[in-house]
Every structure is written in C-alpha cells, then in structure tokens.
Image (tube, rainbow, N blue to C red; front, side, top):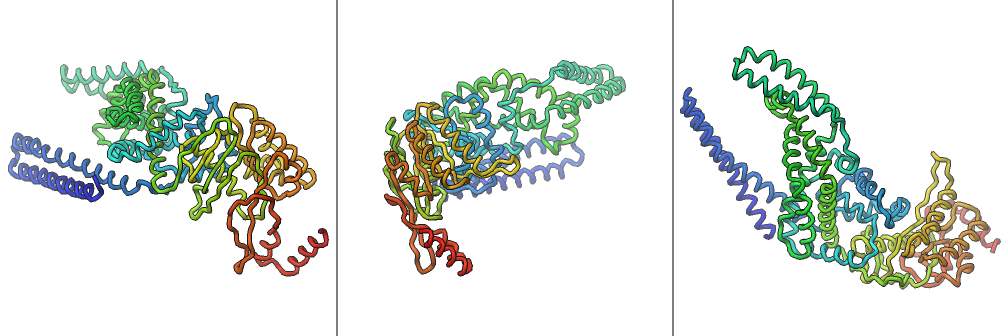
Length: 585
C-alpha cells in the first residue's frame, strides 16, 4: 500500500468517524426530545445511539492507525532527532553486563569513539525495549560468524518485506516510550514487597462485600455505619499500598503494553527468517496471559482524572491493592519469561532500526577472516561526518600514523574503530570493502584529567594504557588497539622511551595496533614492528588546506606555527618562534 492509498484510507476513516458520531448525537438528541419523562423511551434511545457511537470509535482507531502508518512511512530511513537520556538507555546493558562473561566495550572506548553520537544516528527505535537493546547490541560485539550472518539476514528481511515490517512497527509504536524510565529496574531488580498487608487486603475486600450484602438484606440504614467503617479502613490501606508501590504500578502498566504487542507479533506468519522470533515469543507469552489482563486492570485503576464514583468504588473494594498483589505474584513466578519477551521485542525493534539506517547510506556487509589479525578496507568513512573523505588501507601489520595537527589522524582512528565495532554488532560497515579478523576494540583516544579526584592527565593516560595491556591476553581474539598521542601528558624523553616499549609489548601480545603521534623518533625505534603512514596539508590562498587522505610513509611537515599564524597571532611572536626553531635545527 503506497502513501497516497494510506492517505485516502485515512480520509475515508475520518469521514466515517465524523458521520457515525453525528448520527449517534442526532439519535440521542431525538430520543431525549421525544421521551419527555418516559424513562423506557429514553433508555431505548441511549441503547440505540450506542450502535453509531461504537462504530465511530472503531473508525477513530482506524484513522489513528492510518495516521501512524503514514508517519512511519515518512520517517523510514530518516535520522530521528530527539532528546536521549543515556543514563536510562544504558540500564539494560548495565544489568546484563553483571553476568556477562564475554567481551564488552568498556566506558573509555565508548567515549573515545563518540558512541553516544553514533548511537543517536542509528537509533530509529519505536519502543523503550528497542532503544535499550540497540545500546546493548552496540556494546556487545559478537565473535561468531553464524550469529552475525543470521542478524544480517534479519536486517535484510525487514528491508525487503515492507508490509510485514510496517505491521510490526505499528505494534512497536503502540508500546512506545516508558516515560517513567523504571521498566528495566522493575524487571531486573528483585521484586520484593512486604506480604503483611496482603491478608488484610483480602479480609477487608470481603468485609466490603459483606457490608454491601448487609445493605441489600437488612436495609440501607443497617449498612451505613459498617460501610463507612470499612471505607475508612480501606482508604488507609489503599493510600499506604499506593505509597509503597510507587512507580511500579506505572511499570506494570507499561509491561502490559509490551506483553500485548508481543502476543500479537507472535501470531504473525512472516516467513522462515521471522519464525525464530514467533516461536520464542509464543513459548514465553503463554505463561503471561493473566499478567496482561491484570496489568490492564491495574493501569485503568491508576488512571488520573478517573470518574470520582469509580474511584470511590475502587477504594472501597481495594481493587488496586488487590490486583497489585495478584499481578506481582504472577510476575515473580514468570520473571524469566518476561525478561526473554522484553529482550526479543527489543531485538526486533533494534533490527528494524538498523534496516532503516541502511536505507540512506552506502554500506557493505563485512567479510571475516578468523585468525588473520588484519583489516583490509576500501573507501571507508566515518558515519557521523556529513561530507566524509573516504580512505583505503590494507593493515596486516601494526601502524604508526604521523602528521600535522587537524590533518585527520584522530578521525581516521575513530573511523576504523567504529567500523570494526559495526562489523561485529550491526553487520554493516560504511565502506565499499571491509575484510578482517574478529577484534576486541580497546582505545585510548580522548583521555582527560580529573580535577575532582586529583588525577593528572598523565595518570589518566597511564591507566587507559594499562587497561589495554591487561586485556591483551585475556581472551582468545586479538585486541584492535587505537591510541592517539601516546603519553602526551609528560616530558619528551620519558614519553618517547615509554611509548616505544609499550608499542613493542603490544605488538608481541595479541594486538593489532594503530597509533597516532607527533613524535617522529618513535617511528625509528619500532620500525621493525610497525608500518608508517601519515596525513598532511597544503598552504593555499585561504590558509591551510587538508585533503584528509592517508599516505604511506612518515610526515615531513609541521603546522603548529602555521595554525598560530593563520589564527592571527602577532607577527613578532611568529617570527621569534620560527627563528628559535631554525637555530635549534
């Protein structure tokens, strides 16, 4: 169904919605006018008007679905600009990482590669589980080709099967965002509430029913005092329970939406690629049917602006407190299935998000050569740059990159790092060729000092490099080590000697190293283990001009003084700097 057909159907649904609504109002008005105190006629009119009102409600939801479908179609392939709370987004990763034995991307590497920005570029998810899972996926590189190939097949499936994808997107959209940001805490933290109140809740519910029966059997006058007494006690229980459960009622309501959409997705027949999801969802959702119903009832009882009469009835019968204790018991019994459903829905949403990301970029699926300890790339670019310059490199040995300031060294390090991570997570590389080994990516690029802890810049560098050294032989697979300006925070003599020894150590211990430096002396000290490449610049009419292309060899230019001159530093300062350099040489 193309966009014009969707728009047409949305307009038709809008017309029917308005028509049936007006018919219902007209019928109600006519019968009210004719009844003139005739309750039977009035009641009959209300009953008859329910038919067009129900039809108008049906077309209202149809119209809403068509509008959502139009928006989803327009957003496909587009970057989604929205505010992202990464403290909340990383909650799932933090919980799963506690029991994870495989390699995970650490905080320093994530920060070095600007992965919050990269994540924002990729994130087109429609639900909170999807957003959480995409973040988790990017921090957990895979080392099994079969699993990555299967992930790539799923991405392709959603790229090619538009109708099935949009049907699932609509259900994910209905799950939407957990605005309270508590769903992961609720599911993964231990659910432990005092059961002291539970017997009292059931006893007082029976007391409320008894008071009502008393009114019917003995007369209203006999039931007034018991009803008032029960209401006061139940109001206290209701208030205390509501205070105790806090935001968990909201979390249970959101969980109900996740389970409801999961149930509908599990019933879809969408081909062999999707069958794995359907089967897993079916297996787990069967255990959660009662949770869906009770969570809906609980959510309705917690709705703000509810009719006062219904609110009083809920308090008197302890509906919210009773339903909460019932659903908590069910959730505790089936928590493993709930976690699995949450992860499956998150994975489906994140896979669709990657398919959307692929829509407007030039990409290649990676080729892996297990055990090669190499990376061979052609026309590789950084995914965040609007006007990127591509580069090609066949990296079979370690590499030292020299070159001028701002010439592209750091960006190239990040380009390689992000694409290596992409290859083992989203099975998508921003290049025309990516061929390499499975790597653990560990970096030291954007190290900073920490004033509050009294940590110097050099100490930060030393810690970042030490964590790389400790990781070298921790796993089977080699480390892809990316270092920018090694030991820039200390004096030249110690920096050069310490850097050369560390680079030698890394070269000999399960690492493929790419390091950027201004210290040309280092290239001579490790030339038997490292190949040399460089970036450079030209001086044009408008100042410094960079081509951002990597070249083989060692840089012979410096531009620190040129940059000062270009910025407008006084000529006397520039001349004295140049004279000092000339005299030293």
